[in-house]
Length: 201
Image 1: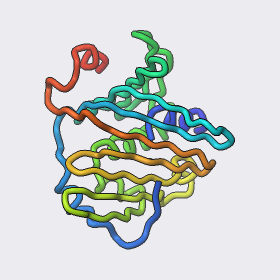
Image 2: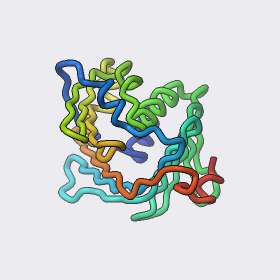
Image 3: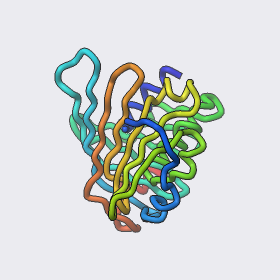
């Protein structure tokens, strides 16, 4: 589990609380649901005991029904492919590590959370988290608190906001580490993904 959580935090990232029921249906209706969604991410991770945060950036793609591609470009190249049944870590074109759901049952749960976060699938997130949110014009904010103690320990609390797409995710881990991701340059449709990226699926 520890190894899987480490991989989870290498991959992405979000802060939260919970209270009254969120306007889930209203927020869900505001979100676009393209078959292919790609863009840029800028990630900052603040580790307990370190003054300077760790920064990275790269590209991500979400393919409905297929998976997520998370390509860190800076400070060094790193590629992760997440599907329903596995997490694959590439170094160049070589598979450096593969975690399968049949061997690590939590792979399926974590991948489900990541898919739901990036696509803004609040209905699915509600099964694992207490959801508190608000809508302001064309924008929305949501805070998530894990329902199960084991999930809370693994993931911490999460907050996200956006409009037609998720724009920001923040994660506060139980350890005190904090991660923030900003999504930008979002494109949709078949032209959003490069041939190289499509080939990794």
